[in-house]
Length: 62
Image (cartoon, rainbow, N blue to C red; front, top):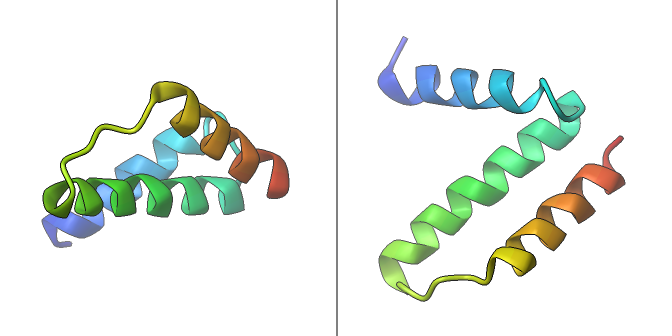
């Protein structure tokens, strides 16, 4: 198993303690995407914006 696969598995297992499987997968993708965007656009998102986005994902995928 590659490092990236281990990372994804660990991340999703950890998220699934708090969210549904679908929501865990979507939240993981959102966070990973944000990390990639920070490399190109190093502007910090407000914590409340991040919290609202993750909440919206979690509520949309119970």
